[in-house]
Image (cartoon, rainbow, N blue to C red):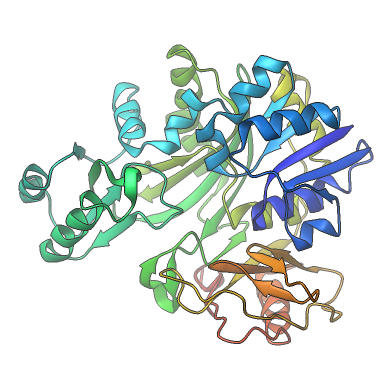
Length: 423
């Protein structure tokens, strides 16, 4: 099979790493890819939102399957254009993608279909938004409506911070993504990520993990796109996963199909496990990042048959995936300044060290300088991942590898997985 992966981050590197091991693979191309992906596949300088360029590339390489990594490609309509050309695509169309690209759409969708979630309201002007805060108790959840790379969410501990966040969002901090603000009730509990595949008719649960959103240890600092993840997560017991499937995931697939957009891809249901059961926090219409990395490490089954089945409607014929009886962890190495304005162009060395067979470093925001040196090119730069019989062992291996990487100014959280180890 000829497979094209769309994207250039750590999630896409993890997908390329797993797909490259499939006996079904003939040719793997990544667009635009990154230096880490270049060691596994061909890379082409076609952007993830370049719909025409990606269609042309798919035709050129005679792609049997296109795998969409980032949400921006889904919002741009890459899947829609490929469907028109008859090219199998793993990733939902733009209409179904509104489950992530518009938090207002997702919340009103949840209300229409009876999905358990917190109270909310959507506003386009500051005055009514500030007035709505009086109906809720602190802390407040303030969200930009559109895509903001995981940074458009503020958990405001008091009204003053909430008002400032509303002003930032509606004042243009996130551009068009902040044309509307969504204010939500704060849910008490433990957050977790559950994934599921759907081919438009049939759905299949596909693993879970826990992420660490805050920038610094002990869940302090601003929200980020994710500073680390681990799997399996103790909170995602078989009973809890079954309940989430029944009350959140299955109704979402049936509901979006009833609204004229059968879902084809992976749904990432971020939920709060509360005393009343799982409640929706938000949807993502692609693999999580960095959750994808730990899922790929733990996945024993060949990923490619599942991706193809999702794209072509054959999921019902496949068995549930097989997972390794092991723990996986991903620790994000971020650039100085992240999640604000990161310092870029910093040279990174030490990646050629022997970290051990069960340690993998995925590139998230790197590029090559003219002299061949590897340099940082964004906020979340490297994903240092490890697999081991226990989470404690995996954690030790990941941090040992991090300590051997030279990345001036780079930082990471040192408590990834600590919550699970305390259980």
